[in-house]
Amino acid sequence: MNNKHTLLVFFLVTLFCTVVKVNAAEVIHIKHSENDITTRVREAIQNAKDKDIKLVFEKGIYKFLPEYAFSKFSFITNHGNGYKYVGLRFENFNSVEVEGNGSEFIFHGRMAPFQFENCNKVDVKNVVVDWDIPFTFEAEVLSVNKEEKWFDVKPINDGHSWSFKDNEISFPNIDGFSFRELGHSHCFDPKTKSTFYGAYGQHLKPKKVEKLENGIYRIYQSMRHYPPEGAIVASKGGNEFNRYAPAFQTQESKNVTYDNIIVHHALGMAFLFERTEDIKIINSGVYTRDGSNRYISSTADATHFANCKGDILVENCRFEGMLDDGTNVHGTYVTVDTILDEYTVRIKLQHFEQLGFKFADVGDEVWFIQKPSPERGEINEVVRAKFINEKYTELTFKNKLPKTLSKNDVLENKTWNPTFTIRNCRITKHRARNLMIKTPKKIVIENNILSSEMSSIGLRGETFFWYESGAVNEVVIRNNHFIDCAHGGAEHAVLWVSPRLGKGFDKTEIYDRNIIFEDNIIETFQNRIVWADRLEGLVFKGNTIKQVDAFKSKFPNAHMFDFKNCKDVVIENNVYKGDIKKFIKADESSKKSLKIKRNKGIKFK
Image (tube, rainbow, N blue to C red; front, side):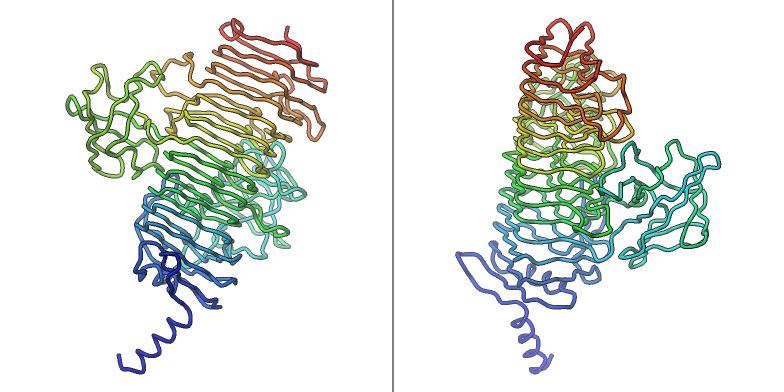
């Protein structure tokens, strides 16, 4: 390179990236450009000389393209593993701060916007994340013929990318990637942009698609539940590829704060945390742009916390349009594959989206759970962890293994469980549950506005399918406003406590404990408020339940309260206004300690 070229490169770097030291951190100023910013940001991070770094973006709209992005093979829990093109990756920093100054980061194609790994402090502020073209297909349902097994749709074109060829619809057809089937789909109401009343989730893989006149397409598929006429059916593609990466992935880090972050679209979850300690998501949101024709924000959960610890706070946030839960907090169950000696066991990850996840490391304490009891048993400390491959790990413990430990018994990490607080949030207009929470430490859910397609609050540890651990021990649910919850086609409740345990486990033994549900307002057209199995210690008090006529109840014979295998349930000082006739159902074991007192409008026969 001659001197002229050297001077030109120096001038360009100086023009677009200014590096200074402030308060012991290396501060890099990113000046706005209309062109792809990916290379400049990647090099700024990679060339940082300090382990304390701060990126400051001049306010503007920035384009991130995958062609020159950093690429890394990534294990991402509840997503598809593989090589990911990353917009901003931070690894092994002492502290990272990103100040967006209200900038919009617009991504194109298959990209993972942010990855943080092994960072001791993370602060990201004032950033909007979106895609130029969403990885979704949306269409208005015009007519349905169940007898002939077809339904007609008119696709939404503006801002979307899709094509029709050889009797099939593909999308988004970007940079050589396409979904060859509509895949996981859900129906939304165009008047409210909420999930459609009475609708079910679908997997659309049509036998054929026929092009009609006036931009209408006829989809031929035999289905148990057809989408309702007038709905917007929104699809995110086949299961193998439709969870590419979260917008923000944070692994093995601590002291993380996301403040004033808005995610309008994500190719998976919006915020994902794995083995991360002390987390705040505040003043933030996951939702489509107001006034846009998009119905899907993140294609999976808005927030997801897997085997985290310390304190988690989600506050003053708005979550809408996701194709899964508002939040999911859980640990991970693994099964015993082989007992290698008195101290060592080979464990196995069970769900295909867990592969590569670090279940435990040296110093972690682990519970042994031995069938048939789901109760947490002996505690032992890991002194050696040997990663075999993405499915198997060998763990050596400080003390001898339980003598009765058997193949297919279950292990749960005791160390990596958080306290969790969510307050002053609005979670509506999305598929699945508002909150799915599984941790043995304290859970506080307060002052939120919640409206759900399935149960609003789900407490469901499971040693089956997802293998998500976390039988609860202390839950406070207070001063929330529940509106039209469980408005989808399947039967759910406002509060749903229902462990799902695999073969060999006792299906009657207590699993979850100690829930206080107090001073909430529930506006509902459905009957079910609490539906609980294997729960000990529920206090349901001071709540106001108002029956509304927003929709017709789909399950008029269901009871307001339904208890099975429960103990020490108290229902007191509540007020019900409406004409439901079936209030409380309890099996014999639940009746023994059930207390009902000083309620208005609630009767127990």
